[in-house]
Length: 372
Ligand code: HEM
Image (cartoon, rainbow, N blue to C red):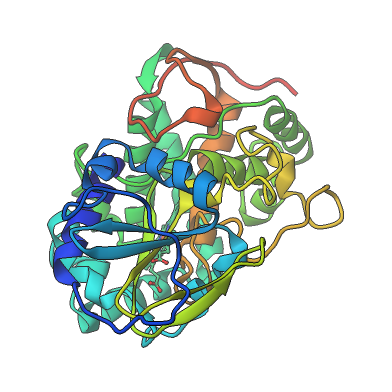
């Protein structure tokens, strides 16, 4: 589904921005070889992730894909991403791209909404996401999670992706939109979902917390769930769906790659970064296909230092996601509840490094209480 949306976005975007620019004497990024006229459309439609990965290996961190004459320049990895994340909207903007997202999200939702409405919606959300309010949401999320899992039988098999999508929609709407909206949600509504791919250490951590605090979960106890936090963060790094983050370029800018190449990205290009590719850059994430929560340990406790704009599950810089802290809060509450109350066994075939955001992940559950 997400692949389809990415392709649809790129195809539609190309029809909205086709401009002629004077590009003489500029050192432009290498261009991916493709068919005349339609460009890389076929490759994009068939397997966008592979297109991005293959060309990253071939050309490095900066390359241009052409679709119907529109240049889409990919910037992958922290070295070439600073301007992408920090440039003012007058230089790299989302506004022009909004037309192309309307078929996906509708005309009145966030990026698809006219600027003024979008700003109002963001302000509305930001109010609800103020750090001091997060503490108050814990009890509401815990109640919602308990209620949700009380409906599970003593044992059974579920599609965990579907279950968590539904639960996250319920908890988000209860906290951010209020009880009335939440009570009117039905099972069709979808939301964000992440998988944390197990591991024994979060279980040990929950045992320690149970011994220390009993069954209680509050804001401060959640802050003690460091192992679980790193597991979730690593799941977001490795399992994030292959969404691209796009901008429209209004003003030429240059980027320098770590190999020492300097490229100018000209006005008129669509500039994008790919989460799935950026999270697999191996000089930033050692052995990137491996699920290793410890790579997110604080500086000084791990072998590879973090660089700004390397972990970009929540974007970064000017348009960084305001929902990050809220999302960790929700995911920690849900997963600590699951770990404390169920044995989970994976039924679906699953390979951590290869997960493509598929929307089915069957899990067999059995109710039990975690013994201390
Ligand atoms: C695991 C959960 C989430 C992930 C992975 C995520 C990811 C992202 C990413 C990558 C961006 C940057 C887009 C860009 O630069 O164009 C973003 C922006 C945004 N996110 Fe999230 N998000 C999550 C949860 C949330 C939640 C819970 C909310 C609010 C309730 C939220 C609200 C927003 C808003 C309003 C923006 C736009 C910010 C701007 O343009 O200045 N997100 N998100």
